[in-house]
Image (tube, rainbow, N blue to C red):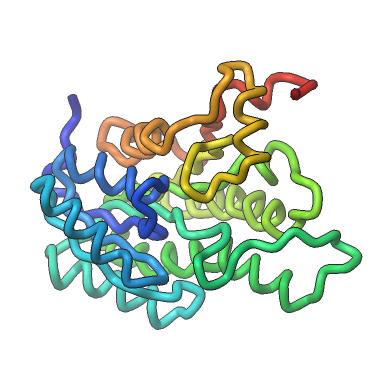
Length: 256
């Protein structure tokens, strides 16, 4: 089993107890990484307590990551608290408690709603990536894992154009980061989860999961396992890759 002892990880969007971000923080922490986790609400401190109860060194920050100063402060906090930074998991996105994702046809979509979704699902990843890179370049090592989606890079969902656009662009951001910083031994990869059984999953999404080849939705820990490998030292020659974690759902042409 590979170890992340000595690594420091930032995981964004980790406020939900049953979400992908918290599953990532738990798995990275159990491999030895010290973790800084973020959320838009104070529930992040409950997640920190749960991680600490598992023996993981963890710190939580409430932040709106669409604001550049907050992204910068999170990176600084990781450096000050844990003395380094080697892993970034950009998981923040989709809807939040305070600003749920909306489903609107493109021809009816207000520009403000478009910008809101792009900022939440793409700009957050850009800002965090921008501010972790100087430290990673100085260290000549880093792992960046972006949580994209099958929505956008692989397919699309009706009335969810901004989200699909942002997630497709996140893959392009991943590739740009990969080619720009490979010589500094920094890798950037993306994961495209399919239907995942989180507290945010709707009844319709759960139905789609049942119609997938494996007959179920995926689990957050199954996405986190892929993240943990890509964040490891052993994944040193995987760069600019999109890993689909959907139980083979993208392979079939007809769904129930």
